[in-house]
Structure formats: C-alpha cells, structure tokens
Length: 523
Image 1 (cartoon, rainbow, N blue to C red):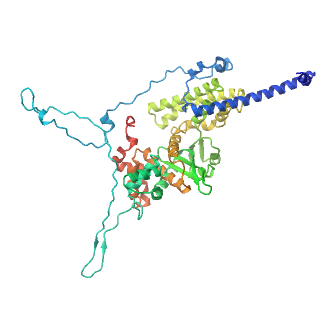
Image 2: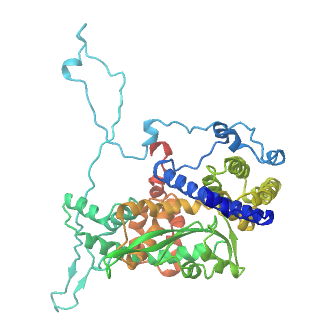
Image 3: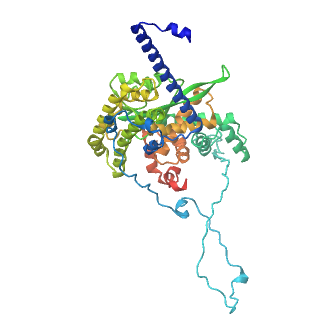
C-alpha cells in the first residue's frame, strides 16, 4: 500500500492524466468483458437454448428495470407503437380421412354376414340388406422389382439366306446399362430427396433380391446426372434470364483421398423470378468469389443475398444490383438482446413494423405493382425513421459489442436493405434461398460427405432437378423416370418442353400425386 502511495504524483496535472488513463483502461476492459460475456451467452444458447428467433417485447418487464429503461425521455418516444392486437392464428380446414388419402388406390374387401345370422331369430324369415358400413385402413405392400426382358424378333429369307432383319432396340436410360428408368429414378430420388445414403439403399435392395453394391449405385447416379445435364443447363439459362435472383451458399465436406480426410467445398443455390421459376444449384471447390462470378457472368438485374464480400466484385459492374436481407440484419439485433435489451427491443420493433406491411400485402393478395405502391406508402417512412434512430444511438454503443456489430451491419448495408421497396417482386429477406439450402443441410447429416468433386457436380445437377420439381408440384420420381428416356429422343431445340413447368401441363396425373400437392394435414 505504501508503494502504491509513492507512485501517485503530487502534481494535480499528472494526477489527472493518470486518472484519465486508468478510466480509459477500465472502459476498454469493461468492453472486452461485455464482449466475452455475450460470446459465452451465444454459445450456451447455441448448445442448450431454442433455435427460434421469436422475441416478445413484453418479456422486457421480467428483466431488471434499470437495464431495460431507455437512455432518456427523448429516446423513449422513438420506438414504434405495438398496440395492435395479435391476429388470431388461422387454422386450416380439418380434412376427413377419405379426403386426406383420396389419391391412394382402394381395394374393396367384402365381408358378408355369416349364413347362420342371415335369418331372423324371432320369425325365422330371411333378413334384407338395408345398407353397408365402410371402414378403411392403410396397408403397405413392399415395392416390386422386376426384370424386363426385351425380346427382339429376327426375320430372314430362307430362300436366298440373306437380308436378316431385327426389331429396333428400345431406348435405354443408360446405354448398355442394367437399370431401367424407374430404377434409376428411385435411386436418385431416394438419395437426393429422401437423403438415404447409397450404403443403406444397397441393403434395402438386397432385401428385395437385388445384389447391387454401393459403388454400382454410385455409377448409376453419375450416369443419370450425365443424361439430365442438358435439362440442368436449360434451367440455368432460364434462371439467368430472370430480373431477380435469390442466392445463398452452404459448406459441404468432400473426401480428399490424397490426405485421407475431408476438405470444405460449397454448394450455391440460385432461384429465378416468377417468369423463370426454377431452382439451380452450383458446386464449387471453395467459397472464393470466382464461383458466383462465373455463374452470374451473363446476369443483369437484382441479386438478393447475404452480405458476403465475394459478391462485391459482381456489384461493382453496376449491371447486378445488390438487395440485402432483413432477416440477417434482424439476427444481429436478436443476438444483442442479452447485452442491450432496450435497444434490441426497439430495433426488433422497427423491423416488425416492416413485416406487418408485407403480411398485409400477402393477406390482401396484392400483385407486384400494388405491393410496390404499398411499400412506397408505408415502408419508406418506417425505414427513414428507423435509419434516423440508428444514427442517433450508434455513438452510444461500443463498436465491437454485439449491439455495435448489429448497428454496423445495418448501417453499412442500408442502401441494399431498403432497395426491396423499388420492385414489388423483391422480398424483404432472403428466406427463399435459405429454405432451399435446407435440402443440403438435411442431406449432409445423412450422407456426411461427398465422395469427390465429380460427385459434387452430380449432386448439384440432381438437386436442381428435384428442387424444381417440388417448386412446380411435380412428383420427382415420375418426372425423372419419363425424362430419362425422352431426353435421348427429343432434339435439343425442344428441351424447354421437358422442363418441369411444361412437363406438368402434359402430365397432370403425375403432378396430382406429388407429395408437394398433398394437403398439409396429411404430412
């Protein structure tokens, strides 16, 4: 204690400088402690907490009053009012069993009354039929696998013993391949859409008498992708002709045989607008900007994505216009609610006001032009006031704190965040592509990794086919089974007729049996 006293100078000026230095160091350490505390809370929430980002502002009343109060009275009046009652949750029509399963075939099994009970016990007269009671049960019959033997007739002239004629060979899905189009479609859909790894499929087929190894199934899938690549290329051209594209990416592990481990590659999704409604995946060996730059080389229009820096070079040409995602911006404020609950609640309230407008437009069934007008009328003013509030509050938050990060993300991307008001077909968020990325995320938990870069390209082609089928309510198995044969017959100039939207018009029955077309209550 005496040594500490000796270090304190007697000069008031030096003492003031020392005090300021101590306060600055304390302020810095306080910021680091808050940042580490926020990181710990996020890790604990990620491990044990709910993944949902729903947030009720009324929960602020459960917190400490001092922590939830605004800085001053002026800031308190800037938060948008939230007095509107929550709309009642609408419940869908509850369907009967016969309505849920109306697309399934029915086998009628008659159960007559036993002979000894067909005579009245009172008067011994025969009873008369007055009606029937029908009950239903769902039965399962294992899928049947058969061998189709194509017997081609041969003709020859016995007189001159020349001129042998043989019936033409049928078109095969794979040249000289064993699997038929239905078997190929089954393996593809089971792997890509049902996320069943090929090792499990091989065991399932062996139970049904088909001794197919995993490597054989892998060859079948690669061959199917090679046949369907022209369909993939046609869908890619359609997507690039859109004036809006939604995109996102996700990592996928790829087996690296040179070092007996995996490396990280990427699958990107690109979704076209209403005039070009297709979903296309692209595989790249890394997350470098070369991937999206190459794919979007001929694209002109709006690109709605997250704030990944790899897109900056694409936006620099001014032919591609950036549209940011409000869900990503909202997530930063949601993560900061533990460290700064009041500012987080205000920011989430502003964003909630923007989505109220979108919900009203959707419930009213507005077209794109009317939706743009509604956004111009209401959202522009909300965005102006929200931006003004962000500017006022930013000087009062630490730049590296969770709330400072949220402010920095929103303000640095503000022009792209408010751009959705320029076009009624644009959306305030990138959830459309986020939903399609789930197809990869769910599959990744099952097949664990891709076998090679060639396998990544194969997965991208087949995922594009299945995703576009569901986008149009088409049964992917029926579509792939038919197109595997027709694509070898039809000229390339007519490939547009084989895309899922046109194919659906010619095959309404296949569309009606698609899982995407079934009522939600049956899922």
